[in-house]
Length: 88
Image (tube, rainbow, N blue to C red):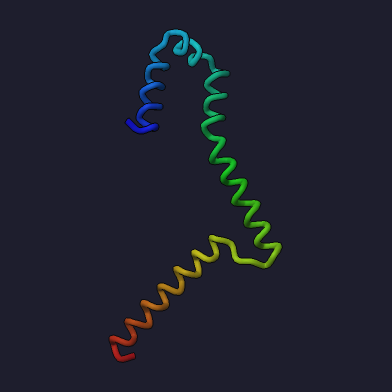
């Protein structure tokens, strides 16, 4: 059994505990749990935004800009290949 399955199993056991069930009915507890669950996404977004600001201040391309450029290059290469095949 891998770690994720083990954690899920233990979580299900915990959720069936009457004390935990009563605690989870408290709105404050649920808000805290939801806040804790959304924290990694918020940290990731904040980190990405700071990285973009640093890249811009150093006149560097951001990861998003590089991805867009790669997509554009790929489309242009496809167009060139199509033109070569059509004798253009």
